[in-house]
Image (cartoon, rainbow, N blue to C red; front, side, top):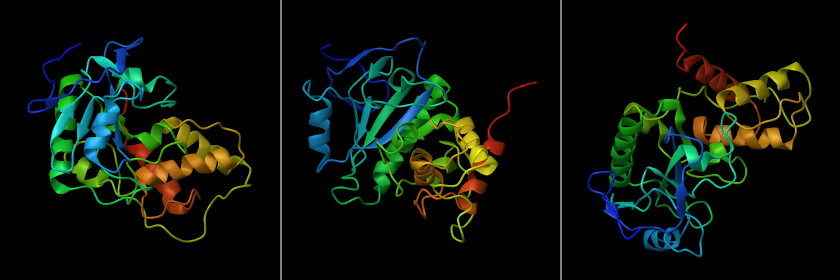
Length: 254
């Protein structure tokens, strides 16, 4: 493919060879947000378009707000890797991936730029409108790949995005106090926590045992929905925020 007309008005096009057809879906119904985790936006753009990398994304948003489209929205980009959400383990087929330039935790993680976030917001609004994507299916890479990925991280302005109708969020209860549940705990309360996480969409086994894997998922939840303290411990703030998120989900018509 030598080129294509951008799906997003104003986007530059730089074609990545790393894509294929979507599998088993008519089109995308999810947006997954990433940070690039590289020293520069130019380096990230080049890597996502390098056939040797075997990775890509539909879009890259530079710090100055410039949007680059590398894969058509109708195609399957290779951005999510091994991932899971609400029973689906082929997130690449059902999602649109957006890489947001930021060096990430290993290279000097910093706040996302205002012009950059304005561009991300406009981009998401367009994608949501074109594909009728529900607010609760605008997710972090860390949501669909807990432990393996931590992007876009605790500095990402989810609340600001939600004010524009992008994403699903509730104001978290203040962090602190004695954790309700900690690693090694067992019983009905742990099973209920795991069940709520699973119901929201996370990949977690419902065992009634607060094991290492459960702690990893709790930390992923905190990164997105309670970022002031990301420790993998299920304190009252975490449990309460999760319960209210579930209550705020749209109800299926009777």
